[in-house]
Image 1 (cartoon, rainbow, N blue to C red):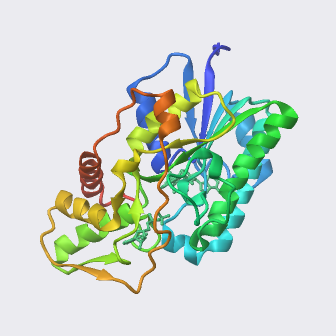
Image 2 (image 1 turned 90 degrees about the horizontal axis):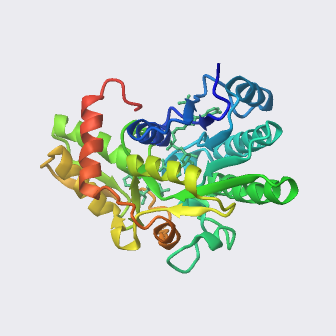
Length: 319
Ligand code: NAP
Ligand code: GDP
């Protein structure tokens, strides 16, 4: 007979980069009272409320980690603004409403630091989500994501639900989307570096290489997600990020990738490509105050592990 005390945690978007990070963290330190269901788009198209309700009826979750989203790098966001806006609006509306109807008290959804205002003071913190327009390059995605924070407050104030959200910076790691055109910068650079090492062609960094980013390893993010699920009880969002001092330029990130893959050829820049938002430096002061002992994996080690994973899984990796 099923243990009625057991937490059943539904992870939407469970087959993606972040979903795999959570799976690893859950497997590394299992809690006896927790069971996970990692859903993919094959379980349900979460843009459809009936399919979403059916998934909740099948899994019978007590808790939800909501990751499922239309996700992509700067260039995917620029080229598919309508899809990024509409699909994310639909997915988020269906998941939060189905969770409410199913009587689920705790949902942890995933925002992103690119939702913050483009024109802002630094460092950005959790109080600044709605302070001004996001960067135009990803406004469809950003505004759809911001509305999760609004929805969380509405469900909390009207229905007493503890729906909350986390705000990770740029994520990378095993099981990323390594597509050269639509992926985020690190997986795209890893894939391109791999190709250039084979072919001997020049390695191209898109844009000026000067924009700054804070990168978080998916394995670290997985651990932090479970900490939020278990220990964080506010409705307001929390930024999950390395410190401001760990921000790197795109050029530095590319050099770390090239060193990890062992590429020794020419490096050139294609400055006809967009830079996107120059920086979105986020404060992790709230995280450090609430979880002071957390240790992030050093960037070089995390990049080496991600490169090694890509090389070992080249045939099957998403690309
Ligand atoms: P990902 O690797 O592209 O995975 C996306 C996941 O969403 C997959 O499991 C996919 O299922 C699922 N999905 C997409 N459309 C769906 C639909 N219509 N119905 C059901 N499932 C659907 O993305 P990720 O990088 O792990 O992102 C996870 C979350 O983190 C997202 O909310 C994203 O906004 C957020 N985030 C990501 C980053 C980053 O740098 N990657 C940064 C900040 C925040 P299939 O595998 O079946 O297609
Ligand atoms: P963002 O952080 O939301 O802007 O998204 P990305 O992860 O796609 O990072 C975009 C930044 O990396 C921009 O400054 C791009 O010019 C730069 N960049 C350099 N090479 C690439 C590449 O091959 N793909 C992507 N997506 N961005 C690149």
